[in-house]
Length: 519
Image 1: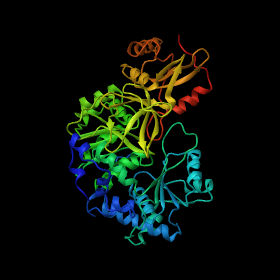
Image 2: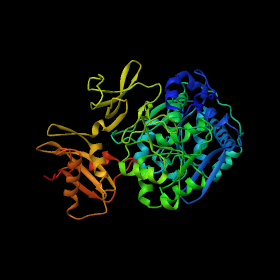
Image 3: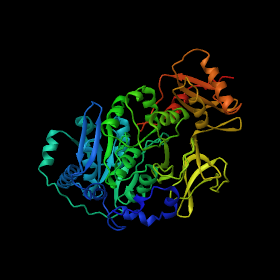
Image 4: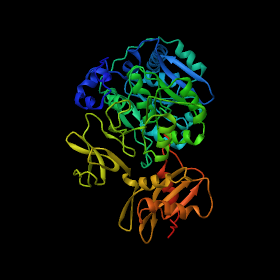
């Protein structure tokens, strides 16, 4: 493995020394022949730790690269014996475990396409994805009979003791042979606006571009003890939590089951974690748990992605964990394009900013016609690819120094009486109020103004004075027009499986009733 880029931890040097071709020095494969299982499993020392898993029942599992190589090889042989051809889809609906990671890499080792699926999908959510990808096999840990009746054209297999026994009879070596451009993984996003799920299709060579996120977005380096509690059924947990560290020979640190702040803290201590990456929601829940004082945690690097982080949680991290959080931004389709360089010297972190363009990427703000806008102007965040600007479907602005600031999804923009308002800015203002635990803002239909900003707020207070107090709070911090004219106090906010606030669910809830705005 090439060491050049791995040895650079200075921001100016990182920009000056970066070349796209240097990323290929981090993998064994070539532009013609490459296999994801080889890069993430086979080329690392067999006795080195590959997986550290914290389970929701309090147990922990640790597995070596040798164990992962053997399990995935046996699974590849099993798939071949079942007649699964190269290019066919293998759906995997398991919690983080040796069988999950073994099946993931066993499928791509075979030359099939791995399709990770969230274990808490109900029949409709699962059916949408199964119909889209048409897998040959669905490997699940429960309810095989139910899923088999739902999908008669798919062979449903339970990862139980009988299945493990069948695998044990298979050889523990399977040499992969795939082209770099062969499809390896179908990844379903956790986006909240797409009505019908559609897989983003990744090739084996995606691991090369992924090194941008690994090096500059997460700050991964050999010797890190890494932890990412995001589910590997979703983009952050799969690519940044699983494939990125393993490709660099760094053990995965993962969490299996329903979120429990105490277990997360215990895992951070037991696994002696030095580098953590998670969604802002995770850090908010850790903060709200009140347990931080009992579990001292002082990482060298800490990052977040998926949505902006509110100022209160940012301050909590700095004061409690002793490190400044670093943001990472991109999309499943294009990868990570804006970073804050965890672990690098010479980089100034600006609170509220997504960061600056990652090495190798040209990122800008463009207007509706795709023309670049000057610094300080609100527009669409875009990355230049193949000679044109590709919209990331988020709005934002860039300051004169090249720092980018998020202003919400393109469909989170609220136009009220001719004023354009950012749902993200209103949410941030609400979150700065001491009584607000969480907040989400959407546009609600209004006969007079077209739309008004409506906020859904989680707060311990329920008195009649809270709503006007919050409205004054936001008006004083943003402007006289940019505030939520309607506020609904709720017990909790709907979340996507990846832990993001599901604003689409709130829009759908709101669609059937009037906005009932306050004056």
